[in-house]
Image (tube, rainbow, N blue to C red; front, side, top):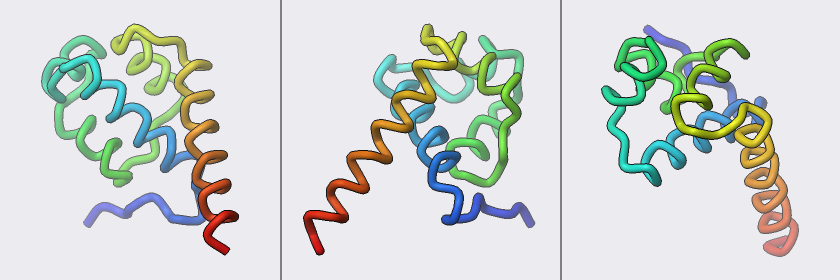
Length: 92
């Protein structure tokens, strides 16, 4: 059984979510991104679901396949986290 990424690692969860959102925004299937990145489709699915912890090298390959820099992908994830933190602060 694959272990899900812990909810105590919000940046990694946010990066995985940003990858999925970018892929969907570009209208690319998991198979399509897997082929471009030289990875298996199920590995892409596992990453997007938070069942895998991708290496920096893998993140770089995926970002490149999504026509975005790795640093921009990380920034997207960080902004997502800031927005979530802001939303949580407002609710309290």
